[in-house]
Image (cartoon, rainbow, N blue to C red):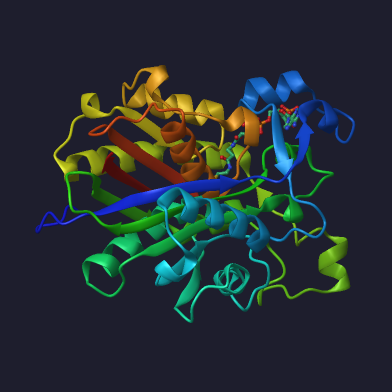
Amino acid sequence: MERKDKRKIKITGTGFYVPDKVLTNFDLEKMVNTSDEWIFTRTGIKERRIASKDQATSDLAIEASKLTLKDAGLKVKDIDLIITATSTPDTIFPSTACWIQKGLGADIIPAFDISAGCTGFLYGMILAESMILNGQHKRILLVGGEALTKVTNWKNRNTCILFGDAAGAAILEESHDDSGMLSYYWKADGNLGDLLYQPAGGTRIPASTQSLAQDLHCLQMKGNEVFKHAVKRMEEAALEVLERAGLKKEDIDFLIPHQANKRIIEAIGRRLRVPPEKVYSNIHKYGNVSVASIPICLHELSQEGKLKKGDIVLMDAFGAGFTWAAVTYRW
Ligand code: COA
């Protein structure tokens, strides 16, 4: 929503971490019936990172969080809430946020996870805004981490080419200048949940020898269907969030779409009439890293010196649930 009182939250630090191991399209050619050419033309992906056997989501998120605190010039004792967005938690319980709290050596502060598929980072920003502007928290660590390759079916070429592992984070605080989050829009439609999901391992289909034999602990997706909904909903979210901020398409200096597929990214750019050089994409390097994709884009853009003070950034995401959300932000 557009806030009446004009108070805003802002990002005071960003950072990300990706595991060392690179899996290229050529590596995948040796694993399933696919080709570098098919993967690149259909998705824009060239390679992705793979967490090691002993790296869980929190391990990636802890590294990203440390770099983010450093970027913000803060110590871990300076944060008063940890929100983690993930669909691939270390454990169903406790939350990954609690494992991150332990790993960072954070104070005894609240820590919890949100599950909103690839939209989780924007859901986290929206949630953080109300917690900060309500005066409940001053400085929030929002970290999106994902080890999707641990729930990937490496025999299924429809899905195994798409995902990678990574974590990205941001520190959020109240803004005392012009910069910050201007408007948001968030939605979900649980009717379409089974177009992209991990069927087993929860209470619907608890782990059993049968669930393992049927690969039900791996991500399943109807890619074609997801594609169509993603383009439609991301356009809807972008238009709504612009209107709520009193902005026009031409005001966008940078569009940061969730990095799910280069063709989705380009379609959103075309629909919003944002020129390609203003549509940020790094999918070739990391694949779809779900909740980590937007904070990684933000960090890269700011590190590359491309983001100037006052620039209008539109972040736009879509994911399992289905969930979708967008945020306008003045840098
Ligand atoms: N290598 C070679 N061929 C492949 C392949 C692969 N890795 N994966 C699928 N194919 C084949 C299919 O079997 C199909 O063959 P057929 O026509 O003989 O049946 C053909 O390519 C087309 O498949 P289709 O699924 O229609 O391709 P697509 O153009 O929709 O691309 C995705 C598939 C998954 C890349 C695309 O649908 C996508 O990116 N969807 C969105 C995914 C997404 O965003 N998910 C996360 C949301 S956060």
